[in-house]
Amino acid sequence: MKCPHCSRPVDHEAETCYSCGYSLTLAESVFGRNFVQMNRLHDAAHCLRKPERDALEDIFDQMEMRFPQLLFCVYLGALNDQVRLNELGFWLLNHAEVRGADFARPNENAVLVLIDVNTKQAGISLGYFSEILLPEDEGYRCLQAARPFLVNAAYGQAVATMFRKIGRALSRRARYLKRNPAELEEAIKRRPTVPSVSDSKADDERDNLMIVEGSVVPGRS
Image 1 (cartoon, one colour):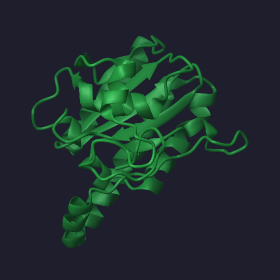
Image 2: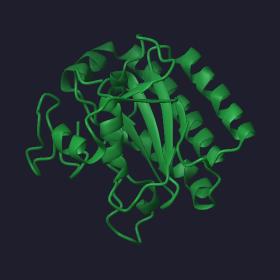
Image 3: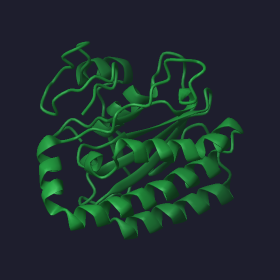
């Protein structure tokens, strides 16, 4: 996995980042220590209309039928300048319970999309099992495909586009791993991470895509 603060590689069993010292304790100091509940379609910004919500719920139903082991959810919020999407995703994966999710879909298996409507940025946070299934380049393509809709504040279309792309990417990855089971076993041992999509330069086209992180702490979901 990677540190949600500095994006440096971190062993999945480490309690703090070797580079910057960031930890779940620091995240809890910002977001709180209480466990919370969220919907799989959590529109805290109230930016989706009912037809959009209904269409997205249908997409989630289809995704759950295709990938019964995985948990799919999205958080849309109007965040202040002090909140970073990747850190919020890290905290949610360790503190949020998705209403209606069964025990076969723990947070370790989550694919969580986050959108900040103030900055029109999006990110993907992954449980450490989901990291194996969504490589870096695929995660970036999913975010890139939704960028035109984010820029125009068409958030329902942005979420729908991302999850359709994620579904296709997971299908391709599943077929590949089925043909190469040894690679799957090795990947589970390595606990790989989807690297970040940095927003460090204003003229970089990745500015509005934020971070793709693998950021769940085992045993805390």
